[in-house]
Every structure is written in C-alpha cells, then in structure tokens.
Length: 206
Length: 206
DNA sequence: TAGATTGTTAATCGATTAACAATC
DNA sequence: TAGATTGTTAATCGATTAACAATC
Image 1: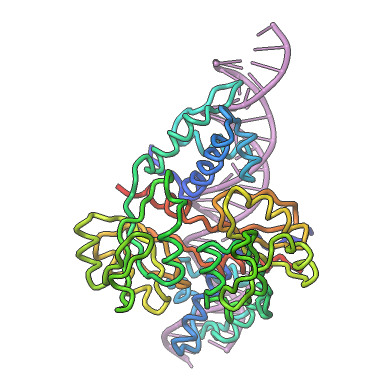
Image 2: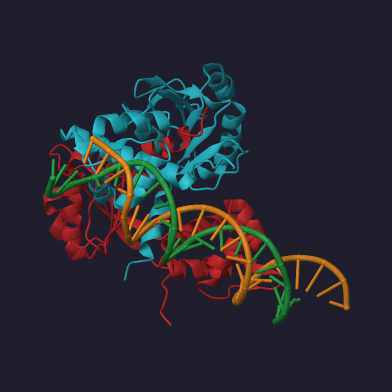
C-alpha cells in the first residue's frame, strides 16, 4: 500500500476552518458540529468531516467538536502552534499597511524585518521597524533563519527579489506583486492579486 | 442534452492566464503556445487548451495563440473589456493602500468612491478621493449603480457593512477582512486574508 | 433510552491528463 | 513538405457526496 499524502486542496481549507472556529470561540461558543461549521464557511458537512478525518478523530458522536480542542489540533497541523518570523520586502503603501497590520497576532506570524531598496526609505522607521537595505537582505534573512516572506515590491523586480529570498533560505512567499513567480521545488508561493480576485467575479456579473 | 455551465475552477484560472499573457505582451512577444503559457503559470498545456476551448477556438495549429487576440478574448469573457467602478470601504492602512494602488488600470477596474465611518476621516482626501460617510454609502452606491466593492473594514463590522453593500446593489465583494461573509445567492465574495495565505504554506515547512 | 452526530465506506461526480487526428 | 501545435476524445485520476453503522 502506498502512502498517500494529504491533498493540497484539503490543506488549503484548513486555515478557513481555523478562522471560523476562532470566530466562534471569540463569541463564547464551546462546541460546534460539522453542519454548523460547514454553514459558516460554505462547505458541506460531509466534506468537513472527511477533511478532518485525514488527521485524526477530533469529534464525538452526538455532540460534535470541542472548539478549543479542534483549534489546537488545526494549529498543530498547520504548524501555527508557534510564531513564524516574517520578512517584508517593499515599503510602498502595501508594505506599509502590512507592517502595521495587527491581524497576524495569534495566527502564527510576526513581522520581524522589513526591507526596501530606496535610499529615502532605508533607515526610516515603519511601524516600529527600521527599514533595512534590500542589498543586506540575503545575509540578514539567512542569518536570522527566516523561512517566510511577504513580497510587496513592484512587479518589475518581484522575480529578482524572490530569487534573493529563496537564496536566503525562504521557503514560503506571500506575493502581493501582480505577477507569476517562478521558484524552485520546495518553495511555496501564495498570490494575493486584487485584480485577479475581482476578475474572478466579474465573469458572473450581468 | 443539458447545457453545462463553465465550472468555477476554470473561470478562476482565466485571470491568471490573462495576467501572464499581458506580461508576455509587455515583453514584446507576439504569439505563445499552450506549452509556454502553461510553463509560465504552472499548469499543464493540455489543461490550458481545454480551458480555452470552453469559450471558442482561439489558436492555430502549428503556430499557437496570437497574444493580443487571446488577451482580447479573455477580457471579453471575464467582462473586463470595460471599466468597473469600485467602491472602497474602510480607510485604514489597507484601504489607503488600495485607493492609491496603480495596478487596477488596464485590468478593468477604477476606484470610484471611498467610505469610512470615522468622523476624523470623513471629508478628508485619500488618493484624490473625498472620504464619504459610510451612512451615505447605500444611497450613493445604489445611485451610481456600482456593482463591485472592496471591503477593508475591521472584521467586527465586516458582515454588517457587507449587508449594506448588498442592499446597495453590489454583487461582487473583494474582502480583506479576516472573516467569512454570509451573502445571498447571486453575490460573489473573494477573500484576501494574508494569514490564510501564510497558513496554507506553513503546513509544508519543516 | 432517544436523539444527535461522528468517522468511514461506497457511489457519484467532476477535473485532469494522455493521445492523436486535423491542420496551419 | 515536415514540423509544430491545436482542439477534442477517451481514459484516468481525484474529489465530493450520500448513506449509515457506531456511539456519545
């Protein structure tokens, strides 16, 4: 029998489950069911049970899932039961917004270093961080052992900066630049291009 | 024979094809092949041909696809052969960055109105727009016939603001708030939660 | 106990890939 | 013509759903 690894598509849903469960917890709920969670995130109850069953038996017949317990399990699975240091590259408006964003707390991430290549920005402070020169990025990121980065530079230089991040040891890149990145196997990229998001919806508009 | 509508998953790939083709065009290329485009976006050549064949015969045997022609077709299909006015709600750092973002030009969108509910922000200018009071949003958006919005408000009020947008006639919401929205049938939501993006990658890190 | 809900199996459904005739 | 590449078919692969025994 061959070992079958968890499909990407299942992994991609887990953060959404986690977010919904945290929301329920914040509202004071103790337990939930696959039905309720599914309604919340727009996924069938059967699929949620199937997804979770990939990783263990987290529920109880008759009563459903303990929210705090399931949150703990999902955090372990997604490896956000720890805090990942993140490098942010590009201190334009978007980089600026990300560095000041308060939403990473308790979700497994902490901005740790910020970079820009523009003279006027280097040395300035953004959200409590001193902006470092991108030319120091490879050594600084490698030295700190940072594996996660957010890319907020212009599209024209995004591939070049991504190459440097990979060289520095980064293995996960959240890409805000509106361009496809080419990265070696073993490096993951997630794309957050607002125009792509919008274009995925206009198709359905009258 | 039953009419089969185009699967969402195919529609969701088209903006990525379009982005890559525009990039090729900017580099002066005239034609491409399913193989080349596939390499660019990380999708098999067969799948690209199959996806495009849903909408017509856009290529030529032996020579592939004319880039300008295919861009035109994809723009039509995605309905971004026009410019959609967009309302942006929430003038925090993220809303601010979006309003000033130059990347919507030529991709089918134009920020048209911006809203916030904070007294200190209402009436101020952000990226050339006067910030309007969110309490005027429903009537202003409806009157302008705006169908597309970007939601940059805090998670705690995102559902409430989304409800108002729907009431105002909006049918496509790009949601930056880290929360699942519940919307009626016929309204689309795309989520851009950076923590979800990051958590989709940490699973694979050592 | 009766009711609720899980985890899992089998069936269904849908998406992807491989292959190739058509043809530029 | 020879080579390249499309559009499409059939085969394969994978994901989702339905159903239900198990059990809290």
